Amino acid sequence: MVASRSHTQLLDRIKIVLVNTSHPGNIGATARAMANMGLSKLVLVQPLEYPSMQATARAAGADDILDDAEIFPTLARAVADCSHVYGTTARLRSITWPEYSPQELAEQIRGNQGEKDIALVFGRERSGLTNEELDLCQALVHIPVDDRHTSLNLASAVMVVAFSIRSALLLEPRESKIGKKHASPVATSEQLQFYFDSLNNLLNKISFYKGNATKVMRKLRRLYYKAEPTKEDVQILLGTLAAINAELEKGED
Ligand code: SAH
Image (tube, rainbow, N blue to C red; front, side, top):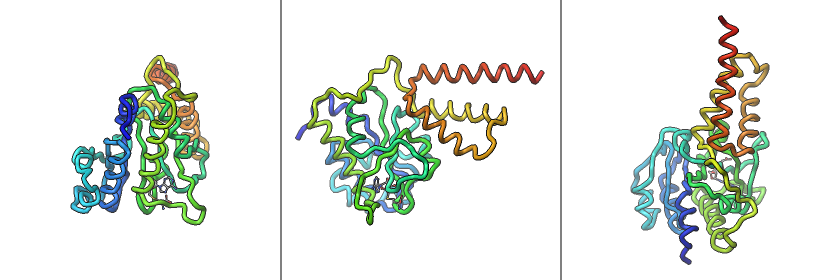
């Protein structure tokens, strides 16, 4: 089935990001699954072995996706220009992050009327994503598999998520209840992370943290992610931090 032009445009904005993959075969199998589902942007963060013959063999003709794959040293750099970052996880985490099923994710993406890229992040074969990597994600995606075998093969997880998105785009009418039009573009991950760093510096300066700074910051991040701030919102937020800083510095004179 051939996707319509608007669907293709949306599919073209989706980045599949693989973090620290050990087995090159999984990278190839991911490229193959992506080609089947009409996705083209593959991003690799510190792959252990790449390029590799094994990856090319498993890609089964999806070599162009492998050839065009971008490689980054960190996840933060890889998703810097994305407006939405979703982390996939085999385990439920101790912190209550917003969590979607693949169908709920697909529904969100279908309603996404922005222009910036949307990142779907997949973790290491053995240990998944670290908490610091999950901190960069606005929401988590969990494929509801059997309780006794919760972990899927990496490329299979990519396939399930990509298929859910493709199904939602092809089978449902274009309008979505979740879709929101933002007057100003949604902030990118880089803009948000810059704000979080600035907020963290200010909170440290006023000795706000009594106990676990990481935990508090994580809760704050979650709150901001829920609001889906626009670039303009982030500018106002940064303005408030700058004003507070200026007042604090006055007091230091
Ligand atoms: N033992 C690891 C499993 C990692 S599997 C862990 O417990 O986290 C490798 C990657 O495949 C995961 O990081 C995730 O991106 C994806 N994955 C595997 N099973 C998944 C599931 N049930 N739901 C969503 N993603 C899954």
